[in-house]
Length: 322
Image 1 (spheres, rainbow, N blue to C red):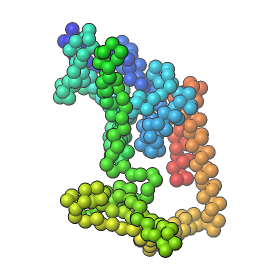
Image 2: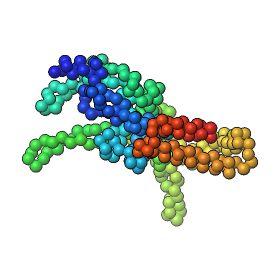
Image 3: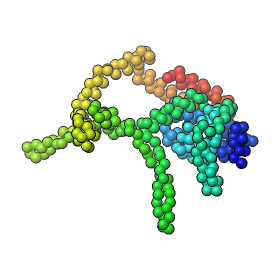
Image 4: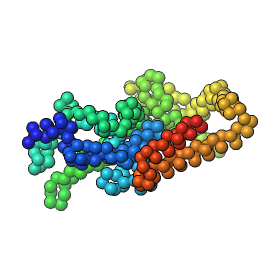
């Protein structure tokens, strides 16, 4: 039986159950679904070119009444699976897992060199370049924000039996930036390399018994926790002095003058605020037209050729303004 399945996979047949989103199954082969393939393109474009996260893409699809393959609302996990699936670059990868015990549903991962890969150009939805850039972007965001890991937790039920349950845990990245503190994970100790820690300075007492607040300073977190045995230097800097230094550097750059010169050079209009507002309104109108055109396609109100022609014209108008 295993030999027959392997042979079918080598011939390009789809043997792993339901078709991925963007495709249908006909005579045991994958074929492109014209409407779903456009939505796959939209997902990749929103993620890489528009900078949306999987949560924002999920909300966009659900708010526009676009259903998943199972005719349900979208989840972030499904979108993540789409973004990392090489099938959209015409690379059909099968035999990634092998059943050991069918009755107990036990399987094992197959080494990558034993995967069965079939190239079928007619299945292409995404270019190789966009797919590769998307994987780099996913890795970049994971390094900044962390990733969701699934952990197995053991518990004992009322009968004394051990049960396994899955729990989603966010693994934070070491380079994640804080939204509340400006200098978090930006300042590092020059001696041990650890991040500087924000700490409230000890208040001094006045003659009348009240305390004078001295603000905050940033110092080596390792030195603060373990003392000189782990890092010999505190490397402390007062936050007010740090703010003054940053403001001074910004003023030296004279960014506002550079921005004004750029606007006047390229717009050549004294009433720049009004001109910018007009351009922003035009971009908003074009984006609304793009979204409306996409919804018309997903509702089968317009055909694929008409959608493509409209979309090309709108994207050209958008590029001219930008």
